[in-house]
Image (cartoon, rainbow, N blue to C red; front, side):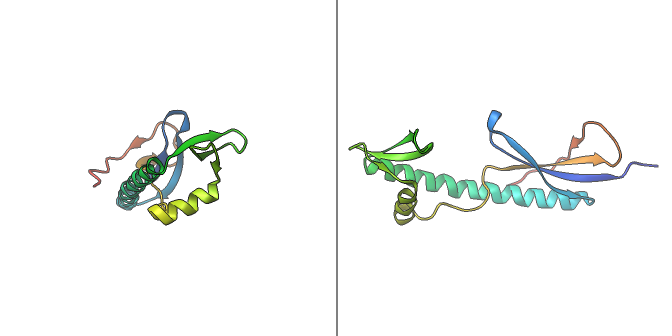
Amino acid sequence: MSTPFVYVVIGSSGEYSDRSEWVAGVFTDKSEAIRIASEKLKTSKENQVLHDAWCRRREAFIRGNGLEQCWDKETRSLVWKDYSGAFVSWDEQEAIMAASCGESPKGDFADDYTVVEAGLDTWGRAENVDMGEVD
């Protein structure tokens, strides 16, 4: 009797010590697991392009307005400081950014998804499934 399989979609983001992984879904149908993982990966890549463009607008705004990003030890957050040394609060930053650069893009970005074929009631290293090319 052959071992039945499930197809586990693993999501991941970050790098090195900041990396996190999670089970994004479990499927009995291999093609459905690949379809959904590919769709989520494509959306993540599209969102990354939007996020990168927004970050470039944000950086240009910061440089163009004499602001500097720095770490505020008191609030333990990344804040802006103007040339006078005055801090700009996070809420003020968000309002300024929304008015000048648009809202920060929503949705997952920089996430990666893979599909793993795992046998039921078995122990061992599961193998990644070839998802083909994802645009």
